[in-house]
Length: 485
Image (cartoon, rainbow, N blue to C red; front, side, top):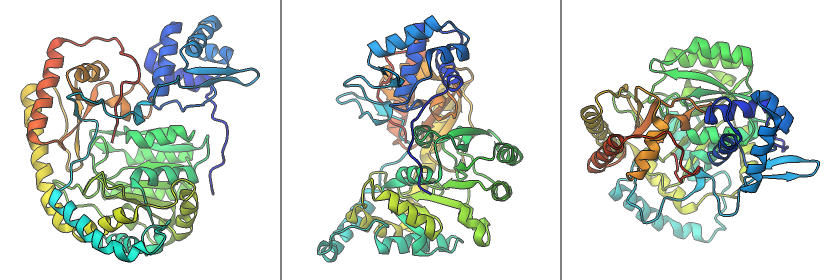
């Protein structure tokens, strides 16, 4: 089932749609080159991808071939493309340039980072877990320390966690990964092939969308609106497109915060079984239930062998600490074996110390969440009150859980606003970062409520200053560093 390697190539129509969303209709050659650079740095075009032939691209855009030739020349001159005789033109990065998704924070700058939707740890619980784990290290120190599937005790604890929530699980159905992002990447790369269709919520988690693009999967977007999911539309999409995969965040969806009702889950499961679609269910936020009960695992609604076509991803990042890179995949034992074989080609095994810490935190999870959730609820309500006071025209639905507000700005200003906010010392993400297609959700802003109240107040003040100073529609240099989580 391993994914086949192959050349990544963008068709003319596909690149035309992507660039048009960034540069607009009938763009000149400079705007066209800028659009390709932006898409490359933003991760929406993979590095070392073959661009369409000039004539093909020109026809798709409805412009002259000379315009495309000039744009490609500009990309080559600036180091963002390279041509090989007889092999076409390929995306490249100039020396010193970095993709936005992997660039570090700006050193020495007083920047409030709202691109990260994750809280700090409860320091006393984390310290106690590390102290207890250190005591356990002695008996592991005499071993090589490689556990490709994960530490056996941790696999058993995660399996028991699922069983206790209504989804009977064996330790052999668990693969411990270096965070949920690795779990998603491993699963999609194993189950998907370049060119395969994948149904995705729109909007969806930015880093998962980046993985999908880099793997060359073709997204089939299904909207998540103020009212949540349309299960009938989701079913129609599955039946008409027959995607090999679907990626879902049913629990306090990132970024909208919506919670999928039980009956919609059941309908999507039935439609996926009918079309043979693998469901990759991201439950990393399921524990952050602020005004609702923690939902049961998605796969618990399936009886018998039907659950084998559902792959569940989880982690300790949101409920405990993102600095502890411990996530997992829950799936059938055969798939777990195949995922592990693929995993060892990348990092062999996770940290034994981190897994011992995770074991302690899982044991203390009920007590930790009893402290964590009221704090997040208070931060959510505080931020909402501040935003209503400062920006009375903005609208959002208060989420029942999760870690961010999905704000409707009332007009498509998210791009200029985020650039202006950065100039005033706030890094925040506009809705387009979470769209399955470029240029969408320009009227949306994702605002996490994971910062302390005083930091949130300062961020509100700075963004108000940015708006008062006025927004311009001009792009700054593409690739200003940011990170989304």
